[in-house]
Length: 231
Image (cartoon, rainbow, N blue to C red; front, top):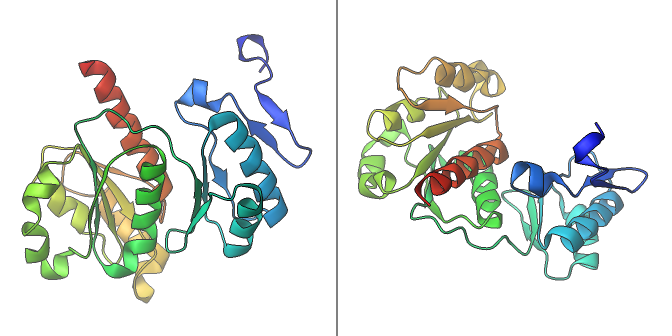
């Protein structure tokens, strides 16, 4: 693009590390590890850490983590979330936590991807897990905690009904995440995705199947804007 953007990136040959993303988008570049070699992930992580002070990698495996840890000894591997972190952003001065609800324990990989992402961004997270519609009394038992959150990420597979239920009970933004959890006719999360897209609950916004990271970024941006409005 040139012009006022300048170069803004570091060319490693196999990747161009976007060091200007923080100034443009409010957060440093995050590494999508899937499809990259361990050595590539390790090198990218070390360059981002040197510039931004912390690193987040998503869809990571153990070999990729080992390559990062060899360069950044403080790195952590969040196995269920399939995320790598090293350090974290400064805590965000917000009165609100982000509530992360999962319909079932089988949805936790996606829910934890969202939780780890938000924690790396310095956000407080309230985990409210295994509260799906098959036993809705479990969610009602946590309703006060749910309503105290600033944004809600609701993760569900099967028929994807939970975000509609939550939206009818709160006055907060609801970010729905369909997962690929379910039997054959769930079509790898497509049934949940379509159910959420056609939700009768207002305030429901939907991200792609299994995209806990995208939901976390959206929640972070909402709270960042709310903080600017009230500052």
